[in-house]
Length: 119
Image (cartoon, rainbow, N blue to C red; front, side, top):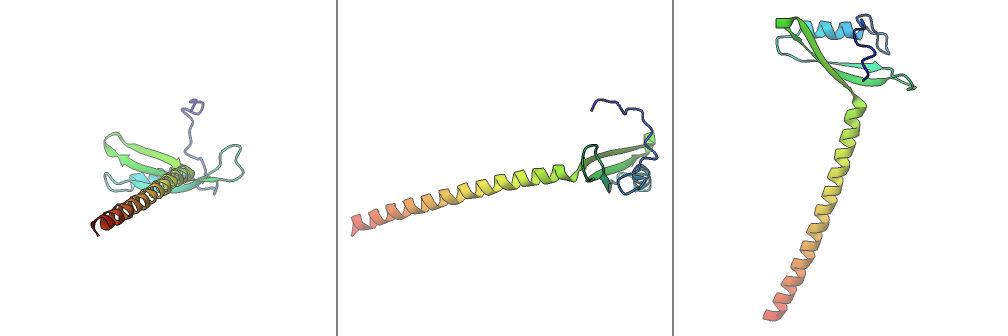
């Protein structure tokens, strides 16, 4: 982020559905119990993208300083991570199955040889 929008008043900013999402976030945070986190979903248009992307924001109110504190991310970021983790788990599972089959075959061979040697 280059800071080009630092200091900009976004109180009247609307999401892709026309909702005053900043006001919605602030109202959700201020009306929550102390220490409670409110989660807000909203569609957001990024310049150069054909359709809005869904975002998730977590907001809370910190009464001692009268601050609303929030953080957000795109669902796509989570989805990319979930897919990557899933692919890694699939690979690990495949490796474990191959190892189990190889160990099973080795045990079969060893036990067969041992049985023939005894008998």
